[in-house]
Image (cartoon, rainbow, N blue to C red; front, top):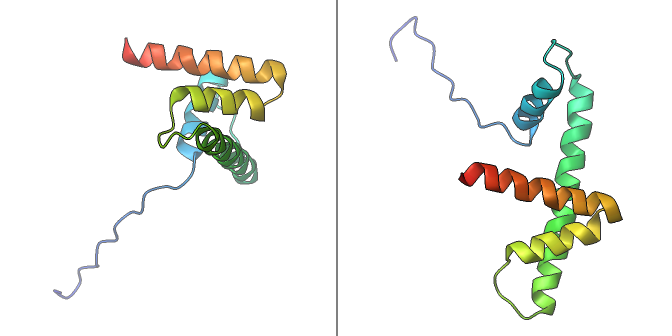
Length: 104
């Protein structure tokens, strides 16, 4: 390496959901209200925990039905089982709305 030139560091991809949390937060609070680092860690841990619970439940459902592939129906049923009653239904309807909007 030539003298006086620093080695370029490659940036590692960001793990977790911080970028997505920031995007949603900006939509809700566009005036510049921010979220602290600790708050971001808590939200990230919450989302990762929910993801783990839903995927585990969906896997158990597919195993129970002797299927080798997870389907959207497995994920929806797992969501209904993991979340409280009304919240599960709302989560499924919001997810369906987001997928429909993405593909149109």
